[in-house]
Image 1 (tube, rainbow, N blue to C red):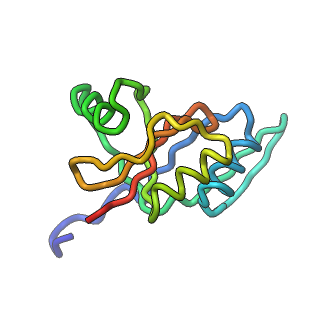
Image 2 (image 1 turned 30 degrees about the vertical axis):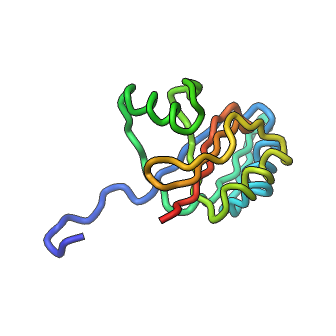
Image 3 (image 1 turned 90 degrees about the vertical axis):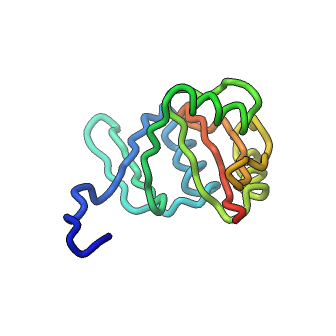
Length: 137
């Protein structure tokens, strides 16, 4: 950031996901994927939330053509809902295998993309479609 640039207004991105099976979703994302638990809160009526640290966050805004192109590259067909969550990891193949063993369904195996990453696509708990990606360059 340049010295004369204003300070960022947004300090954190939090993606809030409703999960009917809260325990299974927490176990998958915290224990299988390895997102550290930052905080947990509970309230009346069995209300519960666990906040997991996912590292650096970005928000990708893609137009419909870009979304279709990503689906074609990663999966070979249109499958993604309007929102898909992507996680950068050190080893796509090992992480994909671990997440499938933990209950995710593989939509597409690790695939090298034109933008030099190795991406897999999974159906995960909490009705989320996720991409696991490893930067190759």
